[in-house]
Length: 267
Image (cartoon, rainbow, N blue to C red):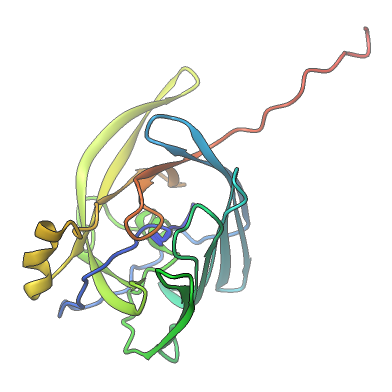
């Protein structure tokens, strides 16, 4: 469940990034995705609620459309939609990310057509001027925009892929690698029942001179963390990540509906 930028965006906004020459292998489908409507909450690391979210997913044959929408208290919107195929392997087809409102210093609208390799970004610069950037890119089959959490539900924790490919808007589109590792298993509870989740870490692989300079100039992107419940029906538990370039780390979690107290028929 979920996707991020990882913008992520949802998981994962990066800068000073360069593509790496690592063989790209799509993640095999172990657990096919279907119809989902999940309720989410976005909080800062102190627990303050920033936005309410919905994950809405539909499927038709082997094609799945998943939309992650966060609506912030200040009216800002983070809206990302991924369309992908799940025929033996997960393959991204199209991706659309919209970020707008006061929360996002640089609003943007990014479109990826993974089949043609066309990537377009519409954004506002430091002065608020509207800019456009477009690239014709050779996109690898393990492209993970909008799919990070779906892919993590399907990897083998004992032998996950070493990395995933990702197109980051910096603001010009850049193809980068996210190094994937397992930090271990951590306990959590649902009601009075104890559970264990696998803790994954995604780290931007910055190569060359940019990689050497990034820590010195404060541009090293923060790691993203994702917790997945394993089993016959794997589930997203939570993530901690930045939703935009230079942004703070925020926590995404599932949330249960609450009902207003009402009088019973006997009252």
